[in-house]
Image 1 (spheres, rainbow, N blue to C red):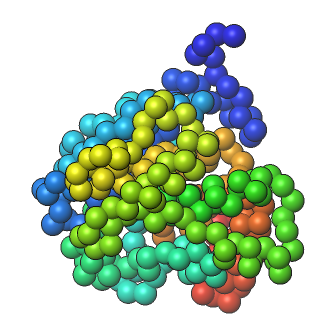
Image 2 (cartoon, rainbow, N blue to C red; image 1 turned 45 degrees about the vertical axis):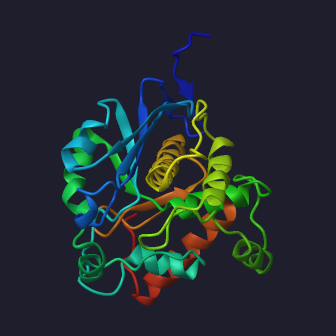
Image 3 (cartoon, rainbow, N blue to C red; image 1 turned 120 degrees about the horizontal axis):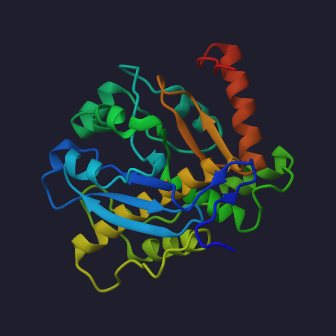
Length: 280
């Protein structure tokens, strides 16, 4: 076999090793961009092998780390926020699916982060026809933990069995609370989940670094979660998507259980007028 031959995905999409799938942990709090806290960019090839894992500060530096071969990008920050208050459709759907999510609004982003950095970056991130989505690293890791005993394409459970089992699964906690320290045990657990689905080529979180290094590793893990979500979306199976480019296009890995629950919730909330009905 030629080393760089394209690979056939389950959906029929040919995932070339020359195509890159990018995940971005975007440091949202504008007042921290000039601090030692960093954003992170992770790049995977079509076989899920790590190509790059870099830290970035300002917008220009971050955009410069995205390769021309990037086809899919997933970002862990809001990229479209049409609502001044309340929350977006995506967060309302996720709440009914027992998935905690920050209730995104322009007012809340201004109060918590000083603004919506991702909204301003979205046009540059989506240039050249790239597929751009938001994702949630905690949900990516929670789904990976779930899939250890429930393969993504196995038949769905009865909801009465699924819901309590899903509620019992938690993503590893590795990010700092507020301005505190990252959590080493959680870093190792998150790394183990990701190492089970992508080739990290020997990268591991530092165990003997200082507090800033641990924070950098937390950012790198978030970016890797986003890159894996991008790769899985490109493969065309085992994902769910809520919303759209104008309302917040949120996508994530999802087995048959989560996919069914998202679909049913979207249909019900749309029928009730609580969210915008997705375009066919």
